[in-house]
Image 1 (cartoon, rainbow, N blue to C red):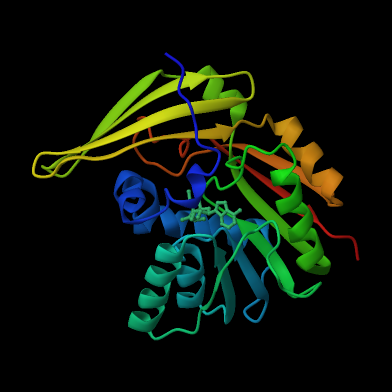
Image 2: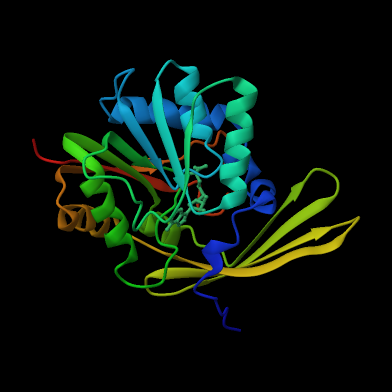
Length: 260
Ligand SMILES: C[S@@+](CC[C@H](N)C(=O)[O-])C[C@H]1O[C@@H](n2cnc3c(N)ncnc32)[C@H](O)[C@@H]1O
């Protein structure tokens, strides 16, 4: 049976339930710290760098950077709920985090507003229009100062195809089970996600689709956006245990610089 996907699925999926279904990655502080180590390794960020966390969700990477002494972090995300949660955390930790609700294709900042930009946690490939990711990368290029660096952390299409599993499930505590059924297409995965709670019954049944990039295709996208010195590191998996973590355990990290 085909898995039909509403092209606007990404506008509504990223809410409190997403924080449950993906908690093993996006709510695990050890994993966030490890990912931030990678950001610090791959980007030449200084304490006062103006950093943009594009599609930054509930702000976990920026909050960790602020805790490490970086002073200027901006999170842009489409999800009002996640931006709200990031704001609550920033208030709780008493840190100054700039939060912007917006679309990464047209972020609304002035040219060259940032020294370095990253997009972490597999946040590309959601919008089905063929030029969407190109537009996001082009926008990152526009927003970077000359000499600034961009990092994107994206599911590795080759690894996903190699390890493809048509179904997966995992438990969350005693109450909830996340069940996923998947269909592999030529350049995408379509998935149906059902979340069942013992107490509440079915709490979500939603389909989504992720475009898959091979490392070479991701590099080509970066180059087409104008980036130079493009490099891709494959085999990034921050999880300690093997398992099916959705698209979060086979990732690649692509970096590129806007020429000086
Ligand atoms: C898997 S989450 C990752 C969030 C965050 N980077 C992290 O690692 O915790 C993907 C995020 O991308 C955001 N997103 C997807 N497409 C977007 C777009 N066009 N503009 C802004 N945010 C977008 C979603 O709202 C969601 O918060």
